[in-house]
Amino acid sequence: MPIALVDCNNFYVSCERMFNPRLEGKPVVVLSNNDGCAVSRSNEVKALGLKMGEPWFKMERLAKQHGIIAYSSNYTLYGDLSARVMSVLSEFSPRQEIYSIDECFLDLDGFDPKSLMAYGQKIRLAVKRNVGIPVCVGIADTKTLAKLANHCAKKGLAGENGVCDFGTLNKEQCRTLFSNIPVKEVWGVGRRIAERLGNMGIDTIEALRRADPEYIRQQFSIVLERTVKELNGIPCIELEEVGTPRQQIMVSRSFGSEVTQLEDLSESVAYFTTRAAEKLRHDGSVAASLCVYVRTNPFKEDEPQYQRSMIVPLCQPSDDTTKLVNAALTRLKVIYRRGFRYKKSGVL
Image (cartoon, rainbow, N blue to C red):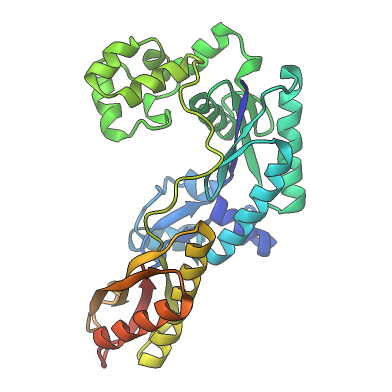
């Protein structure tokens, strides 16, 4: 059963470029909520060796040297564009699993295997034309292989023009390709597992694919055993059309400039709580408690520092905006302190 994994390229950066085309071809980085670290990098920034999660203060010197343009994250914008991308992609398959804000799986069962490369190009063109976001497409017989095919498409290791279909490769071509990709690139294989596998002589994807599944289960887990089977084309991970409900929702934002007044903090907390309530209702969920927090700018060491959070247990779980906002603002008044310049507030 062919499955496609469609992944947006450098999603947050691509969103910023969509609204400012002059950023195209320039080194761009999007920073986390508190402007603390890189959460999205353009290819130009990646070429400079800057890693995902790199703290901004460590890259400022290099940023000045190479003209790196930094943006604070705008998750409201990214969420809206993600919804548009997923809506376009839903037209290409009767079954869709939205895996994250910038990627989803599409069930291509029943499609002509010989036409899947062309179909992948059609998908890329439609998203770019209708939304303005570039994507890559990986196609294979299992979800794990589809993720890997997408990686190959992005890196130009196989396929063409951002689309890779493992179904077009013969066994020898797959063996050669997988022998040159580190095992850490496998979906679900983190740094520690990769290190343990490396100590066992399993340092490439091909080596993991040829490993005994039962032995892998004994040494690691049934999850990694399934990964080995999936790498061999045996589906073990089903397509999930309905995602698992979120256990928590966070809405927060760093301010463009520090604020000092309770009124300004109250306005932001009320807005964040309203957005969180909307997400609760969208998920069909209710909140049993909420947490309000505020903080100053930790990177301005010459200024007085303060951060505080407070959890608010609710008498009755609710998704009512008015009740949640009132509870959040009541606790905000408790944790607020005069004399500080606040950089960020949020609701969990």
